[in-house]
Structures are given as structure tokens and as C-alpha cells.
Length: 295
Image: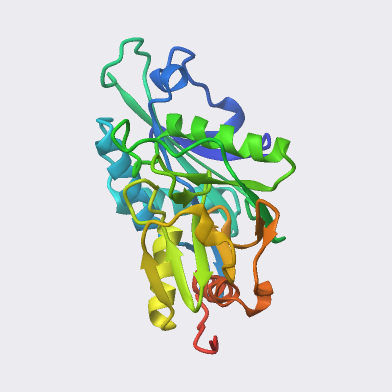
């Protein structure tokens, strides 16, 4: 699914075939989840293949590494050029790109002796599909920000996400909606959450969530389209009776939500603010004008 015998990836300064890539089973990342990664998308546009917000993603990768004391000295512009080369070598335009910073063998709980970089790319549809989602409130909370760096995209943090998504699917839902340590609505396991009520969009503030790059893009779109957004804490009870909701993330893009805990939203999705933002986001990543998007 992710690679074939001909797939090329970037590994520690070289472009090699994925089937020839190896790693050390004593890696600190494998044993302790001590690594950092990114999720990036490229698109086929009228101006050629374009990586959406590559610089911002690689700056966040650098931030994630710094936050958890993983040495990482690549420049974001250099990483962007490496990624364009990787796409070209694999003949990819519409692609999902996965940079991974991982550590050398080290069985002690200390900073790594050496750090390695892998960048892979493959064709991948929208992570949560195209259909409206049925969510449930998860029994798993987002981590306490005093226990780890919640704004860093660290490999080990995603055990929390796997548990939440797996629980939701066992219960018959598409995805989970997670609360923070204080019982406020936080985000999904791999995407941020927006709620529409009376012409205003609400989303959890930074602090207990991973403040996504797509989330910031959505806020920027709202600013341009004169849609009011409030970043504030709110309880799950606020969802009942709301007009609509959606999730957003690089892998998921912008995806509407049908219901939370089987309770549907008041507005049909095509009439929601989320549907407008979904179209505007699509236009932005494809480098098309969305001046014709009318509220």
C-alpha cells in the first residue's frame, strides 16, 4: 500500500529504494516512541506539483524535535527541496509525505547519541474518507500538557490516538472526539475540531491540543471570508443543538460531521459554514481563486 519494489525514499542523505532501507531494532524511537514526524500533502495544480505549506510543516518538525531535545539541524528550505526531488523520483504529484526523525540505539532515558531522517511519499486518499462522520465522545482524554509537549508531533504521543480511534470503531463509529483533562472538547485523534453555532465557529484554543497547520489555514480562510471564529474552551453539552461541525487536518483535509454520540446537527452539511470552508480549502491547496465562495 505504501511502497513497491520501485519506490524511492530519502534516508540519511541518500535516495534509495524503500525495499533496501533498514533500521536498527535497538533504536530508541522503536523502544520508547522518542521521535518526531510530520504529515504533508502535495497537489497537482495548474502551476505544477505544489507541496502545501512545506516550510510551515518542516518548521513544526524542527520545533517538535527541539521541544523534546532531539538534535535536528536540517534547514526547512533544504528539506523542502529534498521533498520535491523525492516526488519527482517517484513520479508523484498528488501525494502524502511522511518525514520521520528517529534516534539511534540507546536503552537509557536520555537524549539520543545520533539522529536520522527518513522522508517517504505515497498516494493516499483522504484519511477519514469523503462521507460525513459519525463521532463518539472518547473515554480517552488528550494528554495533560504538564506531562508532555502537546504541541509537538512526537511519535509516542500517538498511542493515545490509536486507543481512541480503535475504541470508536469497535463501538461502531467512524472516529472519536476527545476531551481534555478538564472535560472540555479538545480534538480528534488526528484532526482538529470546529463547531458551528449561530453563525460562529468554535474551536479549542492551543494548550491542550496539537494546533494543526490545517486548523490555522481554516482560521485564515474564515478571516478572509468574514466568518467569525472563537478559540475557547467548551463542554460536550455545547455540541447538542449546534448547527454543524467538521474536522480538519493535513491527512483528512476538511471533513463534515453527521453526528456526535448519534445526535445529528441541525443544518444539512451543504448549508453549513464547514461546507463553504471545505470548498475554499480545496481551492487554496489547488492554487485556485475562491473569490466566488459566497456566504
